[in-house]
Length: 315
Image (cartoon, rainbow, N blue to C red):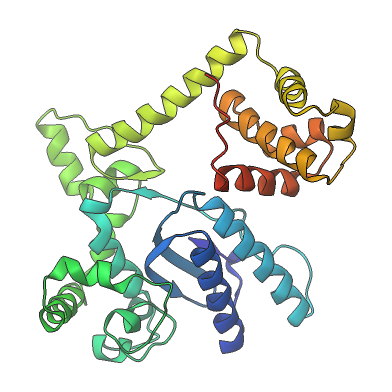
């Protein structure tokens, strides 16, 4: 989810929207991501996608940085365009994929931009038209969504249309509002019912899913943090990682910090950045201060290391 700063518009006309979509398509294709639903509104954007190997941060950073620069240049403005960083929620696909597709694609109807579900078929700034076959976006995985409604295609389209129509006029957004527990359980009534029965449910604001899904995500994150803490307590430091990788590659720390663009130095820098993030949990800004390049270059270095499958984990 991306919003304009102070709820201001981020699109002034169709050209803005078309170029945003074009760049989105290029970035998700490059990042091997799968998009299932999207909508462009005047001051915000919703995108539902499965991230590729590099995660969503690379895709979103490239997209939003480029678009903000384009928008400011074209409309003769300066300063921030978006409200802070994009907001992302990790979702349990099995339980929430279709609910999120419907929630996102019904945005224009709820906002009054179109009056009926039939009129939504002609609204060009959402993925709904692609799913029903009236638009083509090669970067959107419509088949994956329609497969949830059976086969052949005619039956799947009928099932999808019926699914979209079922909640028109109803407040189907209630199941996706509020805190993590409220979203995951489908509203306050279910939460209160659980409490009356004495049931407890794990929840987190950043995660949309049931207790088992939330626990798995949190446990994975905790294990990663514990490994990083163990490394720090064992005395591992960023300087030790720098010295070790420089020694392996036969380059000096001075050359590394001097901003050299020699291929061997750049590769070593990428490996160091990846290790520092994974083994010590360091931020890109902190890593940048030690290796002689800026924060954005560190982010790109980590992306390169991940893309090349660098084996930098020494737990």
